[in-house]
Length: 216
Image (cartoon, rainbow, N blue to C red; front, side):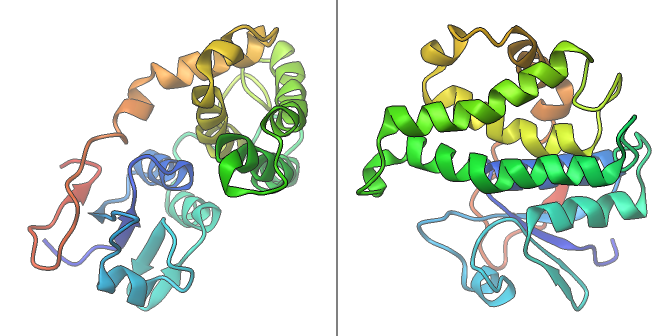
């Protein structure tokens, strides 16, 4: 098979999950190289300016941000029209993703990994992150997906992070009055779309047989 782009990934990372979701949705094929974060392959460190996953190497082009990888894949093929949200349009979807990736992710990290931050109060960080989730719940109370009756880029860029938040303390999360948000999340968690990008790949080492994603 001819050379294909290389995706350095880590199965559980929400950034890598959303990159894989977009690649799979676009129908593109990449070579997946599973990285172990505590023992990063030298080839990955050479390719990634930030030394973080995901990182896509397509010829001489290197994309080191997950949202860039999503948009790269969907610019090639977007059969489900993720780049054309209902109603408010792509700029509004990108703004919502920006809130997820900025303030929400900061509070999520300080909630999930509070012992890493000297000034983090776990309960306060959870409460601050929850403000964003309430915003999503209000949107979803009026529509099936964040921007209408079909999924778009915002849904699949944000869902992996809501999943990470929920799984930090699932009992607490399940007791919150976010019925629309919880239904949206459970639909994602039980979907074939998510399961198809969550295989348990072995750690990649130079010289290993090539692993194609999505599975051939």
